[in-house]
Structures are given as C-alpha cells and as structure tokens.
Amino acid sequence: MAWSKIRKSIRLELVTIFGICLLLSTIVGSITDDFFRDRSRYARIDYTGSTDRIVNQASNIVDHITNLKISIGDKVAIEQALSNFSQNRNLKTIISDLDGKVLYKSNNANETQVDIYSTIKNAMEGSRDREEARVSEGKEYISFYPINFTDSKGYVIVSGIPEGQIVYEMNPDPMSGDIAALLTFLLSFYFITNKKMRYVEEVSHGLIEISKGNLDHRIQIVGEDEVSSLANNINFMAQQLKKRIDNERKAERTKSELITNVSHDLRTPLTSIKGYLGLIKENKYKEKEQLDEFVNIAYNKTEKLEVLINDLFEYTKLSGSEVGIDKQDIALNGLLDQLIDELSPISEESNVVITEEFINEKVVVNIDPAKTVRVFENLLINAIRYSIKPGEIKVILTKERDVAVVSVQNKCDNLTEEDLDKIFDRFYRAEKSRSSDTGGSGLGLAIAKSIVQLQGGWIEAKYKNGYVSFNVRFRIINDEQ
Image (cartoon, rainbow, N blue to C red):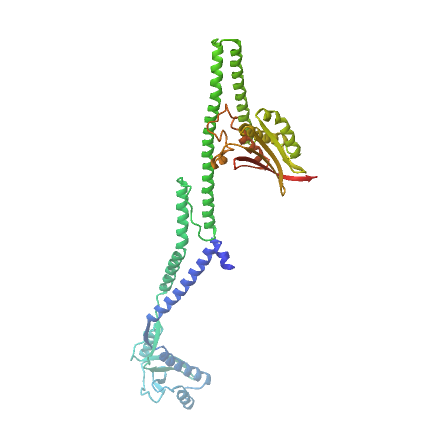
C-alpha cells in the first residue's frame, strides 16, 4: 500500500530516494572512517605514567608530614613516612634543609648534599618536558616540593629514571569519511534517478516532436506518477489537436464540395432559364403555344431553384447552433396517417401506392411535430421519386422495447455499400446520371438526418433484396391503449 502511494507521487519518490542515498552515504562514510582509522594507528613510548608516580610520591610525602605537624628533628616519624611512601626502589627520596644538606633519604640514595639551585632548575625543566610530552628516555626526572615542619623548612626531592610504556594512538584523516559519504550520496542519487531523468527527457523530446506538427507521435506511458500523468495528458492533447485539425480539414473539404455542388445545381437551371428567356426576348418562337411552353419551362426551372435555395437555407440553419426545437408529446400514428393522406395524390400521379402497417396502439414520443413532419415528408417524397413504377411504398410503425421505429420501404434500383454510407450526405445521388432535373435538391435526406439527430433520435438506411428501407427511431415516453 505504501509502495503504491510512493509510485504515484514523484514528491514521495524523491523523498524516498533521498533517504536511501543518505543511508548509503552514512554506511560508506562509517566504513571509510574505520578503514582509515586502522591504517593510521601508530605506537609511541609514553612516560606520563612514570613521571606521574614520581610527582605523586613527592606530593604524598609532603602532605603526610605536613599533616603530622612534626619538627624537623622527629627522626622516627619522618623515616617512617619515607619508608611508607618509598615503595618503588627505582626512585630516590631526599629531605634536605634550605641549604641543601641531606637530612633524611631513602635506602637507595647516597647523597649527603644537593645543589638546591640545580635541582630546582632540573625539576622545572622536567615539569615543562612532562607537560609537553618531551620526556627523554634515560634522563632523570626530578620532582621538587618545599615542606614546612613545625620548627623549620626544607625540601622534598624525589628523582628517578622514568619507565616508558608503549601506547597506540590514531591519527585518522577527519575528511576522508565525509568525502566518501558525499561522493556516495551524489553517485547513488545520480544512478537511482537516472531512469526517471531519461523519461523526463523522453517526455520533453516527445513534446518537441508534437510541437513540430507530428500529431501521430505518442509518448510511452511509464509509471503512475505526475510525470506519466503529464505524458498521458500530452498524448491526449495531441489526439484532440489531430481530431480538431482533421475536422477542420473535413469541414473545409465539405465547404468546397458544397460550393461546387451548389454552383453546379444552380448553374444548370439558370442556364436553361437564361436560354428560354433569350429565345423569348429575340422572338424566336413560331406561335403563342410555343411561347407559353418556353414560359412554363422557365417558370418550372425557377421553382426548382427556389426549392434548392430553401433546402440549402434550412440545412444550413439545422447545421448551426441557432436552430430551436419545440418538442411536444405527439402520437406518431396520427402524424404519419395525416401525412400519408396529404401525399396520396402525388403518389397516385407517380403510379405509386402508399400502404400503412401500424401496431394497434398509440405510440407517443416527445418531438417537434413540424420538423418531424419534414423528416417523413422528405423520406416519402424520396421514395415516390426513386421507387420503381408502378410500385408500393410501405410505412411501418413498430416498437422495440421503449423505442418507436418508423420504416419507409420501397423497391428501387440496386444500391451498393458505398451508396448506403453516403446516402445522407449533401447533394449525394445514388445514380450519377440523376441531376436536379430528374431528382430533388440533393439535400432532403441530409435535412432529415439533421432533424432526427437534433431530437435525440437515430436514422439509418438498409438495402436488401431490391428494397431500400429508411428506419427512424425515437424513444417512447408514454404508451396508451
């Protein structure tokens, strides 16, 4: 659980890496200190213990005799004190008067007179050597103390050759462990973070590649932290940019195609109108009947232009965001029945019969009645226009669970998969030989699809065994028997 949290946060990853590197550097620094400590061990002869014994013996004798408060002539007490404190036979102990005459001495001392000045000088030099650890091997060391008796004053002199003791000392380099710890930290941090840094560079290079216009480039997603999230967002951005650019290019192509198609469909009737009006203007007709024929042809062409312009205007409005939908609860049964009655005269003129196959219940949907009438009117007019004559058009109303399905079926010429894919496109006609003279504006099915989708419905075209079927679906909001 904790590792999962760390993997998802680059901040926690860095803190963990920092802790690991710090631990490694501490261990390496400690090992390095131990290694150089062993290498820096050396031996020397130390006289401190021996000189301390000489000094302590002199000091103890002075303190003891002073505490006894005896006179300088109390031979028994003084000799007893010398005997008690002169256990080391290598040390000579002397008690003299102020003139240097030896009054009492240890058994190993032979002097009867001492040079007080030289003794004091040697004692002071020995004390300095002792403090500075410069006591030489074989050189006598003297400890000199004044002593007060009850009736006189004197000196206690303890001397002897210090005995050296071998001691082992360390002289490690204090920087070696610190330097090793610092290098360990830097190197371990570099190697541990190297993989993450390479991934950051990969994300950076991927962003540069995308900025150059290669929107198909994708950055590999590695890990779950903020860097991988950034890479994922960059990929999403590239995908959305590519989609938007593709849509803009498609819209540009569609715009060009629209202009081309509109120009073509406008030019054809305009050429005819201009031609017939030119004949009338130049009086190139034989009789009034021919004049009337020219006028009727020009008028019919004008009506076709009006239909085309109105359809184009309506489609443009439906494709925009300003179109309004006035939805109401409408029974599809009644709406379709009324529309079929209105179109029956047109179908009869075209030698086509429209038949109904409705379920025996009212199917209520929430739609814009005026716009939905336009949908089924376009589908029925399309069926009448392109149905094989004589023929039959079936309008079927069924239910699929909570969805109402209206199918307009008729027999027609063969349709390919490409025709079905493009049949709702603007100005598309399944038969290339058809034009605005033999067909409609080329916008009827595109308008029908836009209206259905604006209302949240679905529309599709299917072809099977010589029959084309346009299926429209709306969600049912209420069933009434």
